[in-house]
Length: 70
Ligand SMILES: [Zn+2]
Image (cartoon, rainbow, N blue to C red):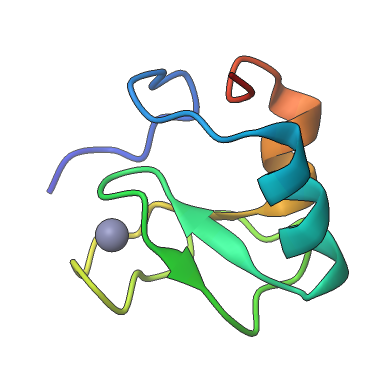
């Protein structure tokens, strides 16, 4: 299994998507881009329900990390 890498920049989101997701406690999978519910804003390396990768990060993490906003 590949190591989760927050520097992966091939998936991006709009700031609106990220802020909305943060409010709704959702995160995003950086492997496939799928949205995941029940995800703390500062979650890291959660398992993705869609692809099984431990690449789900909370919306706030993605905002703070930078580089994920279009
Ligand atoms: Zn995924």
